[in-house]
Length: 116
Image (cartoon, rainbow, N blue to C red; front, side):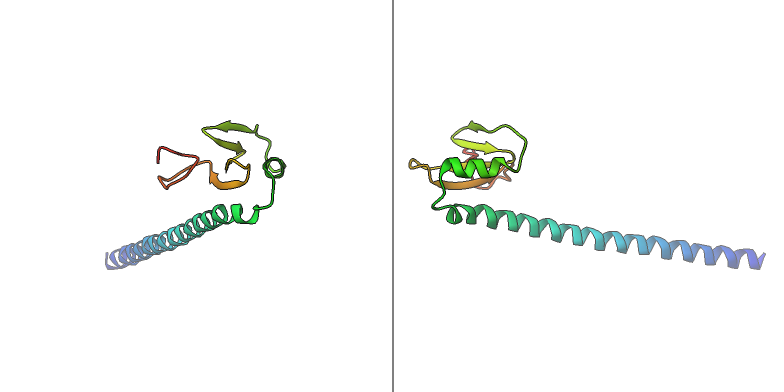
């Protein structure tokens, strides 16, 4: 009887150790995932803000043609933005690139999402 109780105690401790390891491992994995998501979002923001400065001498048609090479979706215009795949381009009156937007908005100020 004592051996059975000792075996059950060892199994209980091993099971608890396993579940503790699983909980810590899940926490670490979620932390890495959240950090990667944060870094990707900051990279997206930086790229979207930098592209109009890089394309200062590019034409509207040239920008649309370059973006169209990397998607098989149709180009369309909606609310003053030209959408090429997952990217929205806003041009000023002289057809210079004013801003670049992703296909989603998290409530940030964005020219292609005037409601925000």
